[in-house]
Length: 515
Ligand code: BG6
Image 1 (cartoon, rainbow, N blue to C red):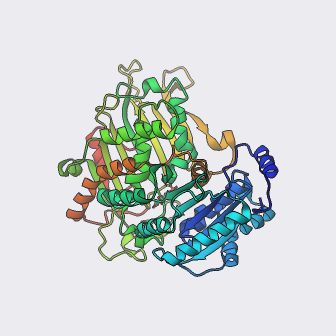
Image 2: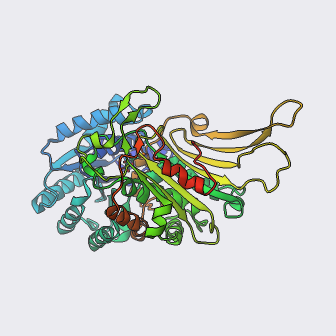
Image 3: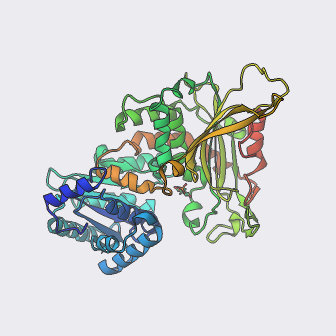
């Protein structure tokens, strides 16, 4: 794994050791290297890839950030974050040390041409030293306001194009990708002035989760579900992304975002597209993304009238932690939050998808912080049996539930006869658990996505038109929130959100699965 001392033969040995072909040799530049995302997710994910031989034997990682730092100090903090956050199964002292040797650091301001010249020089040196063939992956993990500056400077320094005509140059851009449709468009324009769309990888880490990808396998790798996957059999769909955590130390960002921007526009709409899309012709970037965007374009646009009835927002007040009953502060008392902040920490939205497959089937989306459990699930709730042969039994409808996290798996609920002389029925489930079947804990979504990017596979990344379509959908909600002040807080931390969220479903004769 030591960079710089390898040969083509070693690369070949490496390929044989790994179950999948390692990516090309390359340099990965992380902008925002001293930030939380780099420390908690990116560095551990890159280590995981190296430890599993998914990174080529020859690679280098450059951390770029404003904070002055040395290579050695950066290596030291990187080892600490690997030890703290990497998958324990891959942790080995020797590999960790070798990994650290591949790390270098460049400090500078994100708009400073000189700093980018320094970066360019370092890239050229490392490229030569480790024979990286000029391949470069830039990862934008900074606050989004500096994205345009970085992109412009990369271009000016001649770093946005292939360094030798044969190598590849790619850029991963973190969410939030804009803060509304207008700013996302502007960002797309800035990005596409310097990079070709084929070089741009807009990341949404939910798409790197195994269970999210498994949704496509469940639908399009099996013959039995697809015939049921439509308005004839499905009553409604519930998509929940619930977190127990509060805003933590992220108020500076969260106060400018809120749950709609932070979760609905990205993760939750990604899940919605995957549930609702038509089967793509192939599992490739063009076919999959074409189908996903058609879903977003078919969702009935929100109007102020429909927002009044179909959208509920909330903000947590003080409460108690489920489980240990310890006190939880309300959002307004969190560090960095404005005294009468109107920022929503909870949203429910009812979507209607106006196409042949889904007409009349509501999709209920829900996300929130400080809810009673950490749970991301997609529930396909089927229609009731048309005629009840078993009189006197109050039977729920069948549900197919995809558990995205934390207990990754799929379960189907149906009815079974209780043992005994009487005909009594009970709802039972048939479960598939990732943990039981495949072992291991949650895998790093970032590792999957970085690996895909290094191989040039954009299937699990967003396209320019995809991000814009998602913003177009949430823009009216954001505008409505902006012009209608809420009465916050309206739910206690540790509960399932404001009562209006339950009432929204009750009005339709339905209820949330948890209540
Ligand atoms: C991030 C949001 O994109 O996703 C966070 O900014 C949120 O607010 C996080 O906590 C949730 O990700 P996960 O993988 O923990 O469900």
